[in-house]
Length: 221
Length: 171
Ligand SMILES: Nc1nc2c(ncn2[C@@H]2O[C@H](COP(=O)(O)OP(=O)(O)OP(=O)(O)O)[C@@H](O)[C@H]2O)c(=O)[nH]1
Ligand SMILES: [Mg+2]
Image (cartoon, rainbow over all chains, first blue to last red; front, top):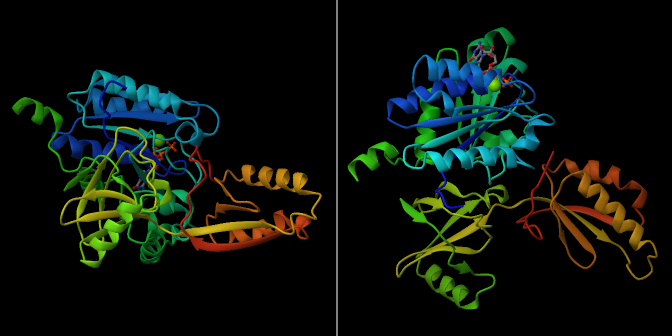
């Protein structure tokens, strides 16, 4: 490796829990602060999530170059591509790192929708966000599982629909406290962006170490 | 924010460092930072010590952090890294001498633990591996029921460090 590692976060969670929408919500917040990001979106066979983010974040809003939203169709078990054999993702990440050493602050990797035991290989991602939603009721996070317990940040999404499901957010919050010990969790609504600021703050503190954006550092240097 | 880029040594293998730790600890100059086994290979993370020091870990290669690593040392301060204890399963082979089935048993036990994607730690007649929850003990007892006469299965809450760290697939 002759290039410097760019901080990387992995985002995992069950199918449809809001991984893509969460990225669509926090990338603009990081962008406002001057942080430049790249996105890799894994899926089993399709690339529609990557296409959607490229359109929403790159083409329409110009928050990042279109070439930095990359879709990866991994086939097979989604978690193998981010944990057991992350070579495909790592080679894409390293290609990005080689080209964007001086301007890129963060690489975001969305895993394919998967079961509750997903984690990211530490060789691939430095920080792991696991996102669940309230649509299956308030039994999660009490049911635990590797992702829910061990991720660096647990995000509980779709709080707007909790009343329709009969999911008690208070119950989920108490369980999250017990299961996660001192590790953080955040309730969000990715449709409106409610709570997402807090997610961005965790990323800035725990992944970016509150350092200024690279383009700012390199300009003054 | 204190940036940690390398490991100074480990007090369980370095006698001098252990003495240094005892000394500094007695003077109240030691701090501890606790991580989980799953975090031992992270290249980048931010943590607080028990006394509130703000640490930023930045490594170029897999650091393979270990229980007892000294990650910072100056005249006034030593920071020690600890692993959080977790539930482990322990399978003990009974009566090894008389057991003519050792080969078969070892293969079966290894096959089952491999199927569960667990890292292991092996001693002369024992194998240890992490449990995701204490409740897994019941599942294990069922799984190994045919071998009840030859093995004992129990659980403990302790720091677990695999033989050699390899890619782990736990589900
Ligand atoms: N009501 C409500 N719907 C949401 C919220 N967040 C996401 N959704 C909807 O949930 C669906 C799935 O969202 P995605 O962001 O595509 O989920 P994902 O986890 O990326 O899905 P996969 O990648 O296919 O596993 C979409 O139809 C979103 O509109 C929310 O906070 N509230
Ligand atoms: Mg998606």
